[in-house]
Image (cartoon, rainbow, N blue to C red; front, top):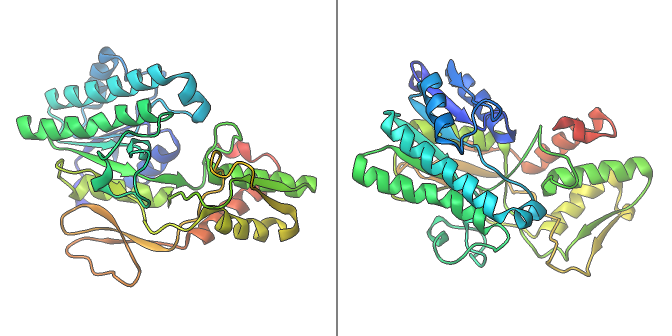
Length: 337
């Protein structure tokens, strides 16, 4: 596409799960000058490394996906580090990008930034209506500061920075490690291992907790479209679907397709403390409305004013395809990391 023809774009975190798909999407859209800094060469918590990266990349556009992140245990063990490293990375990078004359800055936030008791499904206007869940708060708030900074910099300096909030992602090349992987890849690995060993699978929780998931390639496409078309720092933009279904019931049905219903249990003791079973997202339409805000839509309402509509294929089909890719890889799906 013409937008990317002469653009030099820097994708921090471009070697990660989401970042790899963003780089591929940019290439499909015509970007030929893509710079992906690696942590071993550029520690973006250090100002000197940021300046060196900007000097080497000379970017017109920065898509900032990098972050210091971990699971629940890592968040509990490293709250100070996760706050400091993520805050300093974002704050310094935006400031130095402004001084270097970068024309567009796309900052990726996290669903951990939402208040602990925000209504489900999450809505952008609820973002400031409470404190995040305590375990994830240092990481989530550090990331949310980039929204404040982009708003302040647009007002004072005219800096074109935007802030996107993706929901939980899943798809190929995910992290299948049982200790640090998220719910869908962890469930896939557990079920494949149980099938091969002839054992049962237990999903914790009572089925009432809900999660919102987005296929990683759709998120990558939304990010690319926002980089091209969205230029508003006055509000955050959420990349997701909406309208949630209780998780364990859908997960149970998906698991039966893999294993057979007699081999799957749902643990009732920890009713919501460990909601491992998330919901598989419904078919929906992710679209950019005429005001440029990434929002959810329903298949029955597909009218889009001046923007491209992003159809999301059935998430169940994608989950099945992901499971098949793990099965093809054998009994050690962690190799897909």
